[in-house]
Length: 115
Image 1 (spheres, one colour):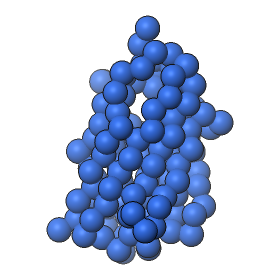
Image 2: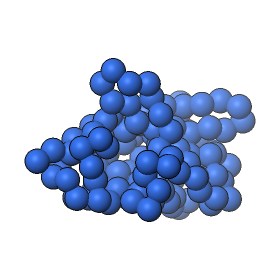
Image 3: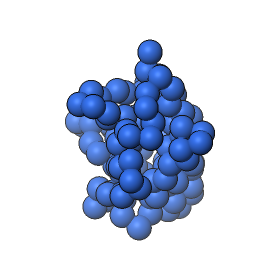
Image 4: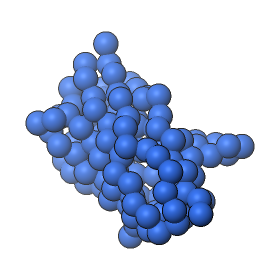
């Protein structure tokens, strides 16, 4: 059974930082493409960042230069370091894993950026 468990969300002021984590189990982490998505109220879910099994990364234009995705193969965990947070980054952040044509989702972690 595949499980993706996100953590690290919270409330911060504009300009602050958070480090999101997603612990994966039940999946061949070493071959999975891992990603972070987010969904704000009234909006569709959107891709934030993705990292391939080989370590290549890609980011949404809105977060380039502020967010960094990384992965730890030994811990089967993917991270999203979020810096210089803006109110428009407020959303539920979801972890995604794709392997062998199947996508899996975590339950999400709330990030709120407000003064």
